[in-house]
Image 1 (cartoon, helix red, strand yellow):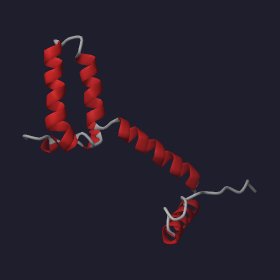
Image 2: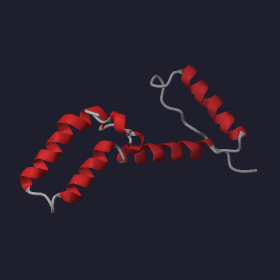
Image 3: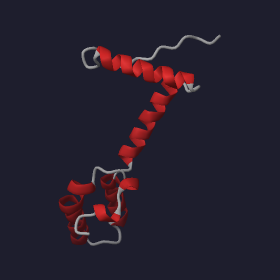
Amino acid sequence: MGKEKRLAFGVYPEVSLAEAREKRESARKLLAEGTDPAFAKKEYQRQAKLTAATTFEAVAIEWASHQTERWSDDHGERIIGRLRADMFPEIGHLPLAQVRPLDIPGC
C-alpha cells in the first residue's frame, strides 16, 4: 500500500464545516475516478496562474512593449492610453481565449 496523504481545504472560519465537507466529498469522488485530489488541486492552481498571465490586458501590454521600437513615443502613449481607457475596463480581465469580437467595445 502507498503512503497516506492528507489534503487541506482551508482554515476555519474562512472555510466553514459545510464547505469542508463538500470539498471532502469532491475529493472522494476524484479518488473513486482514479484521480489524485492533490494533483488535481495543483493542476487547477497552475491553470489559474496561466489564465491570469494570458488576460487580454497582459497580452496587450506585452504586445505594445514589442511595438515600441517601431512606434514614435507619442503614438505608443496614444495606443496604451486608448487601451487603458476603452478596452481594459471592459475586457482587460478576460482570458484572451474567451474574448470574442462582440465583446470588444464599439463593435
